[in-house]
Image (cartoon, rainbow, N blue to C red; front, side, top):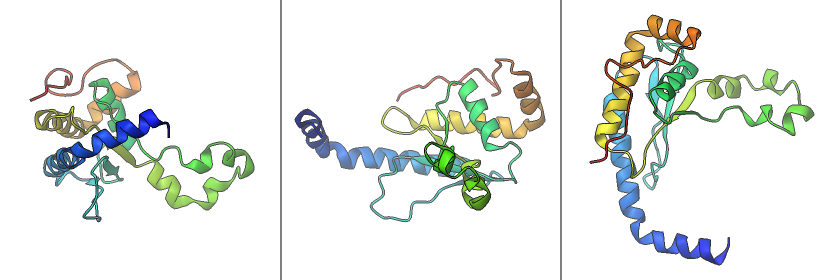
Length: 170
């Protein structure tokens, strides 16, 4: 680490507790908003010292839309959602060339890498933003057939009841 990077890191330590609290509040809002949606589960933090830096959602087969479809819907709505732990590192070089059949030996990794996504969080994401993001998810899941059809047409539409998501800071 360069001296400048170290200085930046040291100067941000004073704000660390505040940043962690913001992340935790965001996490709790996501948990409350997504609770009870079939096929979606927020990954729980088990460590009391977690920094809640990531909002990780697992999308399993009970969901009306798969992870890729939800990520695409959110991206169309201008939400920075990403596939997470994807692709599995066994699918990247040099492992892909060294072990071309690794996917056959790693069914759990294959499964999880197809189900996990992360949602936006941090100091620039407000509670209102999170509610709007979750409303987009709920709307898309409630209209899954229509959404899936629109995704296959690759038409740049919005999928929420209202207009596309634009972050609004409190």
